[in-house]
Length: 170
Image: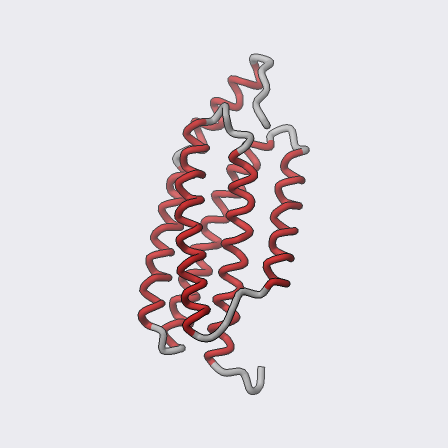
């Protein structure tokens, strides 16, 4: 990485994190349409969709502050990856459970990304932005905790629906 400076690393980390958030947003929005039998799960996703939109806005402002914009190629690739992930889960018998597990793991992926981004921002002299990224760590941790609290009740509902012959997935 000869010749790479902290500004380049910071801008790349911002674009990567934004692409990650866009992918998550698309997956959550897709999942919402099939959760009518899981109102608590849908409510958690709706809340986190709004949090994610705020995080994307925060990332956009950080990119603008350094004269950068999101990478449309990276956004397209992560969007396709998100669509493929959702499509793979959609053909699974237990789509709802698989999406729940993936969402839980995804929250912690985002926690790690924001923790790293906060350090990079500080090193790049963007301490004011680092504070926002630390807030995102708290938001993503809360999201993971909210999803963790759903694992058992959603599994019970899934089992009740499936074992009674009702449709459990979208």
